[in-house]
Structures are given as C-alpha cells and as structure tokens.
Length: 358
Figure 1: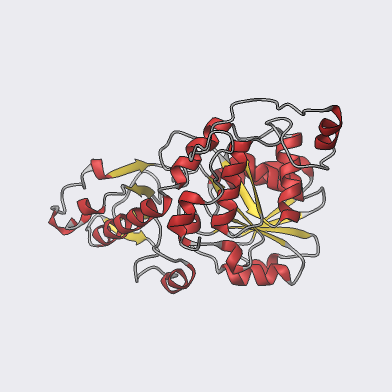
Figure 2: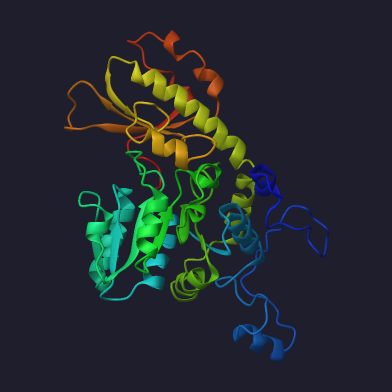
C-alpha cells in the first residue's frame, strides 16, 4: 500500500482472527487472561508479546497506533486520552531536571502554558526562541526543540528540515505538533524531525465525538514516552475512543482536501473584504512564507484561516480563526456576497480561540 488514501483505510487493521470481521472490534476490557502462570510472568516481564491490562496496551488502541505510525512513516506510536496527555508524557518521559526545552512559537496557548508549568515544577528551563532564533537559543543543556507544523492560531511555518538539522548536529530531540496539518499535508519525520504528535480530537477524529492524542517516531524514543505516559501517569486512550478514531481516519484524506479547498476560497474572499486588514493563510501569495508552504506542504495549505479586522475593536489586535466546512461548493462564488453582509454562518464553524482545547 503506497497511496495515502488506501493506507488511511487499511493500515494497521487486519480481519479479526476469530470472527473474520473486517472492522476492528472494540476490545472493551480492563484485563486479559494469561493462560498459564508462566506466560503471565513472561508478559509482565516484557519477554513475550501480548496484553495484560488495558492501561498498558489494548488491541483496539494498538490498531490505531499502527495506523498512525504508518501514515506518519514512524516505527511506533503511542495513543493517549488527549493531546495534553501526549504533550505531558513527552516532557516527563524524555526530560529531566536541569534540561532545557526550546520552542519556536507562537505555540497554541495551552501547550505553552503546560510546558512552562511542568518546567517550573520539575526544574526544566523552557525557552521561547521565536524572537532570538533557534540557533542563538540553544545551549549545552538543551535536550528538546518543540515546533508546530502550522502555528495555532497565527498560521506561521518553520522550516522543519532546518530545525531538524540544527538540532541533530547537537544531539537534541525534535518534536513537531502536526495537529493543524495532519500527515495528509506534512510528514515531519520525512523532514528529519524525531517525534510527531497530534491532538487527534481535531482533524484525525473528524466528527467531534472523541478526545485523544498520539505520539509517533522511532521505537527508542516512543518507548520511554509510553512507559511514562501509560505505565506511570495512566493517560491511556479508551478502546471505544480508539474505535472512533479508526473510523474517522478512514476519511481523513478526503476531508482534508475539502478543508483546504474551502479555506483557500474563504481566505481569498476575506482578502478582498473592506472590513479585513490582513488575512493569514499560507496558501495566499501574500503570505510571507508562501514559498516555504509550497515546498513543505503537500496537497493543500490547511483548513484554518486567521484574519485581522481593519477597524478598531475592544482588543488592540483581534485575530479570529475559522474552521472551514468540507463543502467548498458553497464558496465557489464568494464575491457574490455583498461586502456589507457577513458570509452565511452555516458554512463556517467559528471559535474565538483556534482549535486544540483538551
């Protein structure tokens, strides 16, 4: 299987060996039988494959992890109950007191808040390199660099290959939050990034009915994240949620294509609107990083559009993010709307803060 659309449907899933069911069953159980005392001891020692307790692993969750690992081109993946749980498990599993974490922002507000909170509690220095630049911010104590493939909500990009090369030369682990792009648009590991994470609650799930997060990368890096996040913190994803994500990811490539088409039409419409001062969307030629977006993103420029109003508002700067409906036909002739009338709300889902709440 080489085509992303095919892999989104079939990767990580096999017919059930007992019933032949082609849809992955929901293994709704807390514990598993071991058969013999000797096999149980071997399971707990990690000497044989299998399942012992759903906090550590579950067949339905394992199918989801295999699918995301395939789509991201990773050796392994581990799923969590939320994107926040995934973020916390990365920090707690890979960093120690005295380490430094450097990020290129602006980050999603809750992510930056969590990183700084964990840093204060555990003696990890958190450094914002947005203004000073990455190279100037790295020190011998830096152990992790964190970026978003498309920043939330300002829609800036970072050159992932440059970030990865700079960090790798110093033995620093890189993490990319790929929530806004998904593997349909950007595959950070192919750019040299070490670990990729998602809040699956958003595009991967696609239906707004499940909360989850995931981390994917090399076995050696995913293993301590799994051990900490599941075995010690208990941030495991429930099998029912895993089933919903397996269902949602089957249509991910189709949905992302529609999101991108609709977002570009909305961005072009807003660009011509007299009440809008500037539109932030990497698919527009006016975006300062449009060339980087063309090089780094494949199949579209994302489903998020951020814009700033021309007139004064209660806040000095007002950026509003919109998640575009996967029904681009509604936006085929946006210029037909009078400039004094707002776009139909049925075609947009508006939020004052861009996505990724946990």
